[in-house]
Length: 209
Image (cartoon, rainbow, N blue to C red; front, side, top):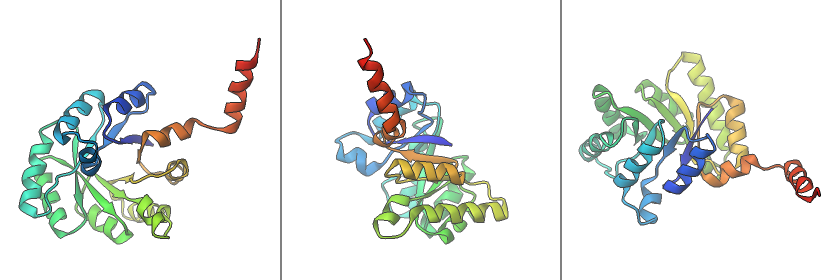
């Protein structure tokens, strides 16, 4: 399973790259703006740090604006993937961009039926968002399991990218189910390294004379 760093920090990207875990980047427009950063500049900077995909999103909501902005974003790096919402306008834009050889991620997937529609649009990735589903009382990873079963049934080639990961258990469950990618904040990647026995072992070594 590949890890796409979920974050806009170039320093975090460098840290994760040094760990050998930077397989790509999931770059949120909202998070980048909240950090006071220029979205396109961050895309360019991150493109230099990773050989993997950078999943970016246009800010426009209407079909014409979405298509125009997506074309511009696609020029910022050789492995830019455009994130589009799973709704009629988004999927129409996805089909247009596919004709231009632009890779698409169907994002904001909250149901198996949405994932089915995204796969029929031949997107490169579909991104079930597990964190928000957990927050509303559902089990987000149940959706991932359903999508995997549907895609296996029909041989769909869209890769399953588990997004809005909130903890290490989400990552482990995604790996056990066979998801292709997980978007992981740096704090969660750090959690994956931790275990009480590891801490005990390291503490013992530090105490040795």
